[in-house]
Length: 199
Image (cartoon, rainbow, N blue to C red; front, side, top):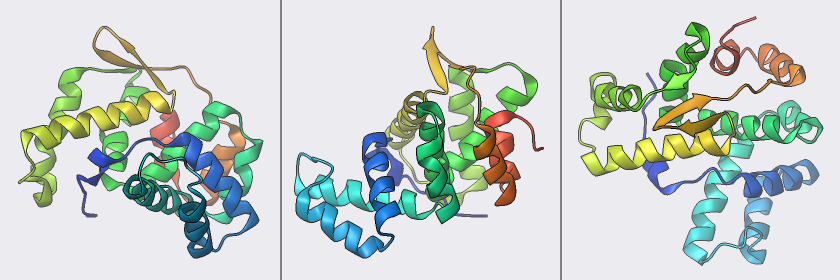
């Protein structure tokens, strides 16, 4: 089982930066050069150099986790599906987010409930130490911040909205070209996460 990390407490959805990096990667997929360029020009307009280093590292790791064929599809997608591709990249690089999407989000689509209650979110984080020993020493504050980060990712991806303390899954439509790409790359798990089906 892949290890999970609490590092996401420091991260954001960073969609604007993701779009910029995707465009840059299409022109030049040498990520060392891209990193140097972004840091030199402060492409992401970060408020501090330390913040720029963190944002650049995370965003380029997300972009780099996508295949060239997936990246080539990006500009053809509508804004919601572009945000979903960013979410896919986050799941690629943050095992905690993947686990949440598979264990909590996917069943909401399969069962048709489409509501992530606060207790469901809390239950997921409470049981993490049982399956991931590295989570056993996380503080309550870390767990609280991680819950906030996960919810923020879902909101920024525009696949949920807030309603009376509950995250309600939006009626988004996964672009069939993106679905086909997931099938071709043998990511039926991601297809199940995002659609509730595997075919």
